[in-house]
Image (cartoon, rainbow, N blue to C red; front, side, top):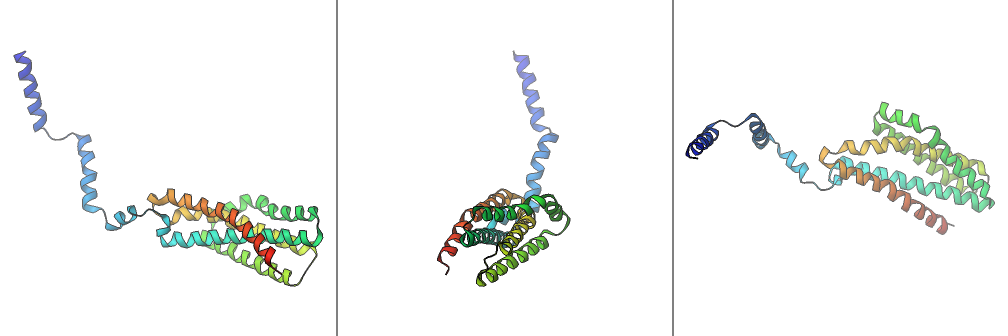
Length: 212
């Protein structure tokens, strides 16, 4: 027993005096390197709790929510306008089909465009097209047009706007924030889309209902 105790004591002294293993050295090195070389901006990013604190993402969020919100309002107003003129469920169905066709036809090309060209330009083009549809709808409504064809064209334009803008908009958001904020950015992106889909039609119906 005494001999074994001496052997164990000798091993403990040898281990205590030996240099750290490669694994332990690798584990310690990043901490020391990080303490010496981590910039102040890294700590500033880690302290953020919301991607909305990033200016570029905040502007993108406002543009994404605003465009989706406006398109939802436009689609509701187009549908109600057609139905109020003709009281025809078939015409309302044609309007819904016109909004859906671009989403189906442009699904793959719009994704390719979002990957091939700068997404901010694609978003700008879609936003411009959406503004054009809104102005055309205002002009058609002010002219008291009762024909279905102009509204059908407006619905087609609204669907095209959504088909072109959606892939670029959804892909652009997470690229505007640091890696640490990507989960929060994805959550806010979903909120922008779903919130606009819920609030937009309600506000559109209210605007149509109170309009002369």
